[in-house]
Length: 222
Length: 386
Image (cartoon, rainbow over all chains, first blue to last red; front, side, top):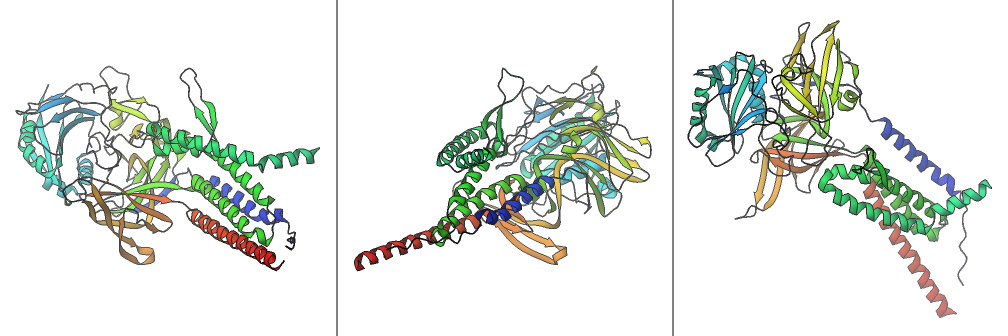
């Protein structure tokens, strides 16, 4: 014969009270801890500001493979940028073509070279943060450390064009697969700054560079 | 009367029918959530279907959203109550110990999901080979960073989260004489150059003075990014430094100087700085010979934590995350010709709960099996003797 089980008759509700209170406390903590206040950090200076996953940056268009947030192509409903008062003109070498820009981009050049390569034109009002800050931002985009004023002057190449002096910088990354960027800026009399950039894998950029320099030499005011 | 109502409510919560209905609702939610991921992205769909109490839907013929289905949080909560009620119905006696353990294990599993839903923080860390990074950043949330760059070695970073910007008004930046007046906030916007003849921009200084801005609906798909933007006016010592446009779509740096201190103003993905840093020493993307089919992704990082006097190499690869200082770093993605590694970073204070639950349920099943086996053997023995 089986003996009927005997219950110790402990108060079950009392047993459950503690985890219940703990659970509620945890919930309260979770809700209360959601901070949306100004926070302060003291951090060592970054070598350069990098925005590897900011696809919307006006002058950054290196779409990433893999499952990274993809580079955002100008959407179909984005109107092309208007022509600034003192727009620049240029002459494209044979085989190159120009696509209209969108959003903050004024134009995109299509180069007749295989490989990852992009040439873009962005125009921004005023000095757009200054040359040093922009050059360091570009260097950051290919993983290079920031330059100081002396380093900037050393890295600068001058191209004389009809529109004025074009400051050109040519940087190659130190990574396993080298990225290269040829970036130029020119200020126009209407107060705008124009940025022309050629970037991508080092090999196709090297092939396209002579043509790109020809484009830079051809810039003139409309 | 009250007793009758209470006992009816109790009977409702512990009913097996309720369990069946809730499990059916959960199945429906899983199917809907899976399908919704196409449009809303993984996180967007999980938030809308699984981590909400009510699923809301916007019908094209209505101007407001209507509740269409109980959300995962509500179904989960009711299931937990149902489970607790059922558990309490089990007599607290040794022969029922296995059943108790199994039920408590399931309650812990549900609690783990609630903790994850409310407290888990998902961020990522993007590092290029040779680069050292000491912060993780949000996938979707933005912050307006006011950075005092005057010191040659240190930056003082003051971060205003987008949620605070959305409330508008004046935001005093503690530790500085600066107050930021938020003139207008756009959770998502489309920026373009200001067309000739267009009304002037709200911005009076900086790049934004020549930029036209149009508000856009929020996006949540995995590959979409909200171009969070705001017009802000820094004021210090009774002086206005003009109205600036800060946007994640603007790369150009913008700064102003107050009493000899230079401040950068930038909208960016929300960062959390860490007391340690990772340097990416090597990233490997191996493929099967003769194909482009990935075989292995791995990041060799140097973890440097000055407070612990620690500096060591760690290899993070697929399914082998690094658990460090309450965060878990998974190999998630890569880019820039295999020179950029993206680590997905998860911080979940309840990460142990599913493991605790598994142990409880497993032990419970074993105990229950042992008890039943013992009882059955005893019964057989009694039969033989009898």
